[in-house]
Image 1 (cartoon, one colour):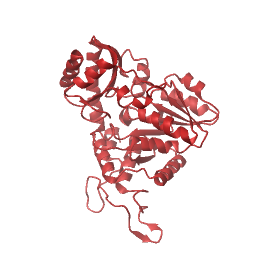
Image 2: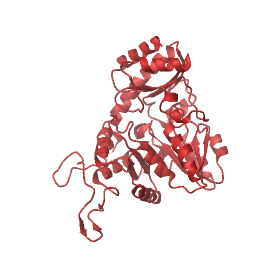
Image 3: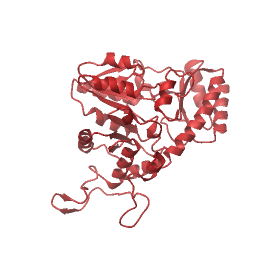
Image 4: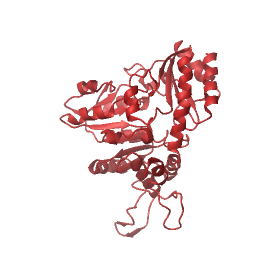
Length: 380
């Protein structure tokens, strides 16, 4: 089945009991067993498994071209679970432009458990090779990155990582691109991670995370951690993400259409100093982006002339774009990362330009969105 069909049907068959077309929400914590230690269809306790969650996990695996999917209570819960595959003194190489919450988890929490982290420019495969050490066990990529929308050649980095003596795991956070635009497992990644809160859910009404893999042994290790740690989503959260995924392809095409219109405005506006968008002609990794992504997505970042104060005036001056954190919903959002989503990286090597503005372009009428950004820029 093609992607659009999988998004609607993968992991979801009509209910065998009554023919319900939509996946039921199984509000239960436990399940009757047919005998002592004889769970029916493998269900015994909802932290371990739940039918609604299983449907979501199977759908996610199909969309990413994986074999096993695992759902979590948040994107950071999924990230934390991946890192629990490691042992103390293991080395992790991560990109030097990642989500602020990821940096906070790595630098402020997991370092206390004797994990070693290095942040490097993953857009340069040679930089990745140089930064790896004999104790490197995991390489963490975002592509496109948050918030600078830098692009890493996944296949090139995968070849370098897997040629290393330890064969570290290559993890790709695919939140910005979604499996509709980019399939990291097919490009050599071992693990794909998502914040389902964003484009997969798509309606700003649920928080969730996901891990998708192909390897059975790796999936079993992650499933053990999922159950042992217990950071799982509730059935209603799973239902909401499943519902959101059904329109993912249509939404992503509209996000892209609207984003391109705004990029064209930003390129011409005299108060904009620099634009970051993967499919923009001036983007340094545009060729790679066009090769491994279906389209450029709905995220745009730009730096204002006038720095922090100008960025704040733009963010506070929109009428349709809502000043808020998060991204990937049907509604358009605007924020200043240095003061909001990426405050945790302040003073580090991942420090964000205070004049940077990040847009999550929604699916409203593109003319309305362009006019809203124009009037905010003019007013700044």
